[in-house]
Length: 534
Image (cartoon, rainbow, N blue to C red; front, top):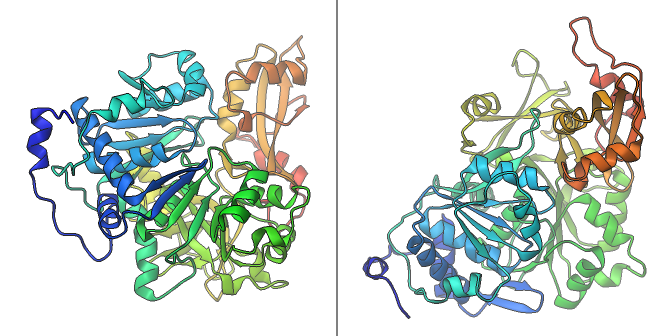
C-alpha cells in the first residue's frame, strides 16, 4: 500500500507494552487485536467485524485522518445510522487524539448546523440519507465531507492507507475522546466533552470492589439498543469492547428486529430505554421463549413505571439492572442492582445506589446538604464526569462544582443509601428517553406571527413516558390552528420535540416578579402524584 513519507516515519515508533486491563480506547483496540483477533467485535446486518479487523481498519482511518491534516483536538462529526464504521471511526479518533462528535440524525438542518458550527467540526462522515439535511443547513458544511455509503467515498478514502499502528499520539485517561450534544434550559444544545476515563471509571470501580451489578463475561453477545449519539449507546458499546465481548449494532431501533436478533443470535445482554421494553413486549406473538438466552438487561434513560418493570421481569426472566446518570456524569453513576429488583417493595421505584467510588448528596436551594428522606437537588461526584461544556466556562461552573455534577433532578436518599427521583428542577421533558427542553420549543413557536406567547410542559404518556404539551397565547386578531403550528415547527425542530397537543389560553400565569409559573401548568397533568416523572 502507498504510504506518505510522513506516515511512514510514524510507523517505526515503538508502541508501549499493553497493561493487564485497558485504560484508554487505544489500549482496548490493541489489547483485543493481540489476544483475540478472530473474535467478533461488531455484528451489523449480517456483517462481522473482528477485533483484529477493528484494530487494522481504525489504524487505516487514523492514517487517513493524519494525511487529511487532522490534528489532536480537532472535531470529527458522524451523521449517520449505526454501523461497524461508526466504531472504526471512534477508535481512529482515539488513536489520533481527535474528538468524535456524534450527531443525532433525527435533528433538523438548523439543529445540525448549530452542532457543526459550535463544535468547529473540520470533517464530517455523512450517511447518504442525511445529505439533504446538510444541503439544507443555513451554514456551510465542514471543509471535508466523507460519504459513508458511496464506493468512491469512505471505502476509497481509507483504502490506500496503512493498517499498521499509528504510534505517535499517546492518549491518557484525561484525553478528550467524544463531544455529545445535550439540550439545555437556554434552548441551544451544549457540547459535553468526555475523556477516555468516562468509559472506564465505573467498570473499573466495580471490578476493584468485586461488584457485579453490571458485568461482562467471555462469550457475551450484547445488543446495543440505544443509538451511539446518546451517551447510553456509546457507553454500552465501549464497555463491551473494553471487555472483549461482541456487540450487535442496529442501524436504528425497531422492536420486531430487536426481538428477532435476541432470539436468533443468542444475545445474552442488552441495554435499552423503558420505551424500547414496552415496544418489544407489545409486538404481536412475542413471549418468554424469545428471550431465553438473555441473562441481563440494563435499562435507563428515563424513569420506568412499576407495571412495565414487573411485566418485563416476568417475560424476559433475566437479571435487570437500572442505571441513572447524565451525559455530564459520563452516563451511569447510580445503579439499582439485580438483587434490589424485589417486586412489591419500595425499591421498585428507586433509581438505585451509587457505584463504589461514586458519591451522591441532596442539597437545598442554599447548597446545604439535606438529611435522608428530604427532597432537594441531586448532586453526583463520579470519576467519570465530563471535562467541560465546550466553550461555555460559565455553564460548566454552574453544573460542575468542586467535582460534583448538579443534575437538575429533585429527589431524596433513604437511610439505606438508595436514591429516589421525584421531580425535575430544570424543566426537562423525557420523551422515550430523549431530553427535550421547553425553551427551545417556546423560542421556535414564538417566531410564528400568530403566537404571542408559548409555554411548554411535559405531561404523562403511557407509551413514551411523557409527551410535549404546548400552552399558546394567540396574537391579537389571530388564532392559528394546531395544524398550522405543527406545520410551522416541522422544519425547525426534530420530530420528538414537536408538541403532541396544543391548548390555547388567554394569558400565561406569572408570579409577582413576572416569572412564569410553569409548575402550575404542569401540575394540572400530574395532580398529587408522588413521583412527577413518568
